[in-house]
Length: 267
Image (cartoon, rainbow, N blue to C red; front, side):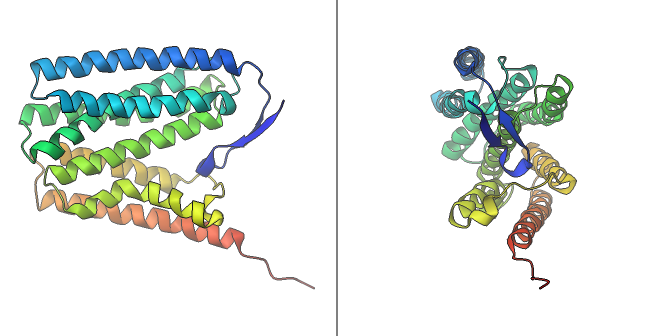
C-alpha cells in the first residue's frame, strides 16, 4: 500500500511503495544492537580507566536506547528500501558519539566545572569527528540512491541532539551562562511551536544559510570544550553563534508565515 511521507523541514516529499518493512525493522534492530554493544564497551572502558563513574555510562546508554528505539519504530514507514544503508550507519555512529556527550553532560552536571584537560581534548576530537561525519551521510545516501525522508530526519535530529548536549556541557563547564542552553533548545522550541501553530510545521525548502548556521553552531560549541577557550572568549563565541541561530530560525518563521498568508484576489 503506498504511503506518502515527507521529511519535515527538509521539504522532501515522496511516495513510499514498500512491503518489506518487517525485514528492514529486523535489520535495523541488529544495527542498533551492534551500536549499543560498541557504546557499552566504550562507556565501560572509560569508567574503568578514565575519570568517569556509573553516571557517565548510564547517561550515555539511556540516551542511545531512547533514540535507538525511535529509529527502530519509525524506519519501516519512512525508508522505502530493504537495507538500512551505509548513510544511516554513518548517522548511527554519530548518534553513538552524541550518546557519549550525554554521559559527559550527566557527569559534569553532578561534578561541576572540573574536567581534566586530556579528557576535554578527547571530547573535542570526538566532536570534530562527528562534525566531519555530518558531511558524509547525506552525500553517501544520494550517491547510493538510498536517500529517504527517514534518513533526512535522522540526520537532522542527530544534529539537534548533539547541539543540545554540547550546550548543556558548555553551561556545566562554566563556559557561558544559562542562556547558552537556548542554542540546544531552539530546535525543540520550534517543533513545539509547530504543534500549536501548524503553519510552522509545514515543510520548508532547503536552505544553505540554515545548513551553514548549523555547522557554525556545532563548531562553536565544540570550541567551547577546549580547555584553552575560557570566558570571556568562550562567552563571546557562544553568544555570536546563538545570535546566528536566532536569525536562522527567524528567517524560517517569516518564510512560513509569508507562505501561509492568503494572496490578494485579482478579481
